[in-house]
Amino acid sequence: MHRLIEKGLMFGNLIRVDSPILVERYNRALQHLSGQKTELDVFHIDISGYSPEVGDEFGDDLYLNHRGVNRQFILLTTEQAKAPLLNAKFSTSRGILKQFIVDNRAELFALTARDAVAGEIVNSVYQADIPAKLFDIRKLRVEADTTSGTVAAADKLGEMIDRFKTEPDGWYDDVLIGQMIGMAKKTGDVVRNPVKLSQMTFVQDNFWTDHFGGMYVFRGVPHPAAIVAGSKADFDDLPVPYTFDFKDLSAIAKFLTLNDLVEPIMEARGVDSAAILQQKMDFIVAAVAAKMGENLDGATRRDLRRLGRQYAGKLPEAWQGLAALVRWAEEDGPWPKITSEHPAYFYTLRAKDHPDADLVNRLLAELTPLDVRQLFICHKEAFYRAYGNWPDEKRAYVVDFLDREYQVDKAGTREALFGHEAPMTEMPKVRQPDLISRVGPWGAVARGRR
Image (cartoon, rainbow, N blue to C red; front, side, top):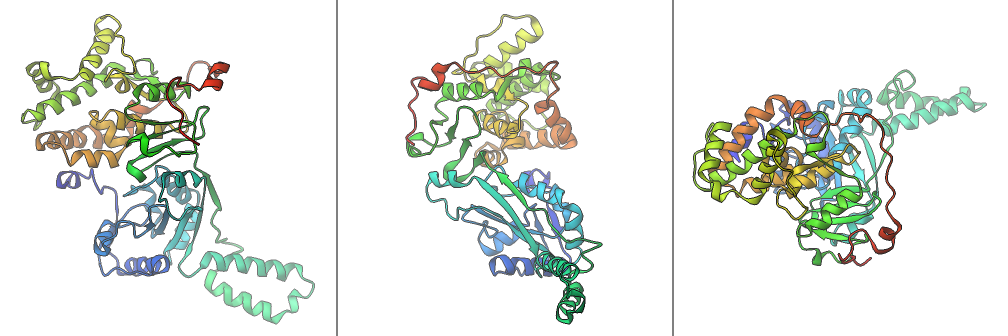
């Protein structure tokens, strides 16, 4: 993984902690949450305050995420909002932490100037020993305070001030006044500078989890289902009507279509669809050439075209389908019939503009692993796992490509691939026929047991 780390493609944008004051604050928060302390003087933290160096020291990558379902966090600076979330167990976790930091930026800036803020994304599940328990996670609440309890103390002081103002004898209550003065020394002037963090609750209907080999849960859609990376035979007790695995390609395609979650890249507005598909073809050629031992160091599109001709007989059907689409788009070729069973099908899709677009693009990335750019952008956990099994030639090519083509303009690349322009007119949602609600949208596909 050294290439990825050197180019900032792994452990990139982490926050460096090297000040004795910050280390001491981190240790206070860490002991407050877990009863542990680090002996390190310098380390790096992600958006949640997790440090890979501290995790290595403890021999526990989940020291801030007990059993993978109770995400705790330590904030030393509001700059952590820009950092990634390492070892993510749920696709929603980073978004929740980022929104909490952004919505409370002013308050957190003031609090972290004097102390660390420690907290937890609270849910009612403490252990996910069977897949069905993951469905009990529905609402998540963020709780946080400084290690010295500044926020709680400020709330208590606020109550005392209200009593002082409203009770008839408040002005003469020396005990109350003394308590207020003592509390104010700890919290500061909460009247002019309120120390209060927003109470934030999040509904988790649709999400990805790394538990049990990987699972996509879609509950907040017209036709709910779960999609698992393993065998669906091991997930027969999920509380959703349908369970699919990655062998059920037609069923997954129909699920995405019926719930209006995807659109063909060729029909997307404001994008160079042919260029996007051509790049996907290049990635496939690179995978084949690397497998054949070709040196891809600094390979250009011209080099990949040459390698494509050289290994034309070994290019998979997915490449052939994409090539037919590009010929249709650029050379007035015949329209290719690419069904959901065709290996190129999911390479031709992207998420529509809806709140779960990132989740759908993550699913599509896992269904199209040869598109290494989308895999890296949308599903880093799957990217890092796949990277470990690639030949060295492919690793070198992918790292060089991501460093040259993606790192220089991350936002622009994401916008070009996944951004959406507003439609000319708002299209009404089409109601599904009653037959679907009676027999289910997937026909002969077996329903999962409730």
